[in-house]
Structures are given as C-alpha cells and as structure tokens.
Length: 262
Image (cartoon, rainbow, N blue to C red; front, side, top):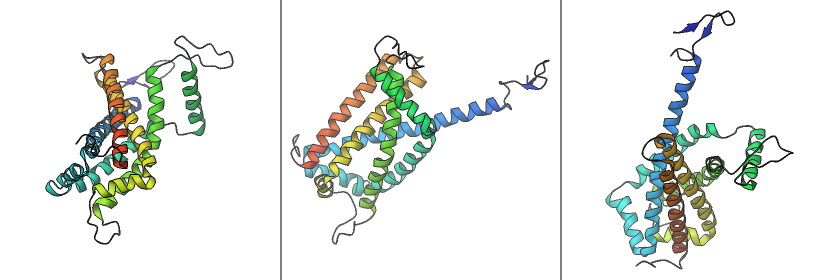
C-alpha cells in the first residue's frame, strides 16, 4: 500500500512503500553502512599486515630490508598499495564521519557522556544534578573512543601516508638516494623524534581498528553462532597483540631491540 487515507492524515504515506522518503533514507543508511564497513575492514586487514611487516626489524635490519625489497622490487606492490590505501582511507573517513557529532554542543555532550560513564558504577548512577542516569556500558564507551581515536588517526595517519608516499615515489631530495623505504630511512625517522608521532599513531590506529572490527562483528554476526562473547575476545586480542607488537617495533627501530629475534 503506497498511501494511507485517514481522517487525521488524508494523504499519509506508508513508511514501507519503496517510494517513500523513509524507505529511501533507510536504503541510503544501509549503503553508507556497507561502504564504511567494507572500507574499514579493508583498512583493518592492511593495518595488521603493515604492523607485522614493520615488526621484521626485530629480526635485524637485513631481514627488514629484504621484506621491503620483496614488496618494492620483487613484487612491485608498494606504489599501487599506497595509492589504493590512501583512497580507501579518505573514503572511509568521509562515510564514517557522518556518525561524528558535528556541532560543538553535541561534542561537549559526548565528552560529558564519556566522563560520566567512566565515573559510573555497575549500577545506575543516581546523580541528582544531571538529567542522565548512567552505568558502565561497554558498547557506548567503545563508540566514544572510536570517535576520539578516529579524529587523531585522520591527522596522524594522513601525515604518515604523505611521508611514506614521498619515500616511495621520490628520492626525498637526497643525492644518491633511490626511491623506496630502507632500514636506514625507517630508523632515522624514529631516531629524529618521530617516534612520538608513531607511538601516538600506532596506539590510536590499533585501538580504532580493534573497536571497528568488534562493532562490525556485533553488527553483522551478533545473532548468529558468533556471539558477542567471541567478538570481545577478538577485540581484546587485536588490541593487546598489536599494541605490544607496535611498541616492540618502535623500540626496535630506535635501536635497542633491533635484531632481538635474530
């Protein structure tokens, strides 16, 4: 039925009709979810693969260089991957950013919500001076942290992509330097002070990735055999494994742990 005629609403439109605005809005929303979800899943896979490749420094600079040469020379994947990931990165941001509070008032409200959830207990917090009654809620806390880390990843991740592209496509203005990432270039970055930026990027991107994977699993698989409990296990594994691996890699690039696994 495309329309409903009643005394109160003579030309009321059915929300289930495919020509209705409600139906079109819902259809657009599901398309946006698919775009942000698929691009997020692709980026999550890339992040895991990228961090594992970077951790080869723990086997020594020679092993690290062999891994880089494999992707840049033997299998010339570095350039197309950087271009593709950059495009996917910004597509994901555009489609996922619609969930980020746009107004300053909404962001302040989100910050207030995060603080109150953090300070609340297992039972409902009875705050007489607030119109909100809260208790600790795992999913809501993750959503707030996903928004926070997403904003940081956008800034630091964009800088990292530009820097890597500059490495791969140019000689960086150094005479005798060939395009490409080398162990010397990677360690020089860390030793020059960029380790602070890389640690911030590593922690936020791992947290954002782990939360994103968890929310995707809950959203699409929660009602199947893959229950919410399994999703939490995946979340904690991704977060702690790649956080520890990332910290070890940063230390390895700085020198102290280089080749510790060799």
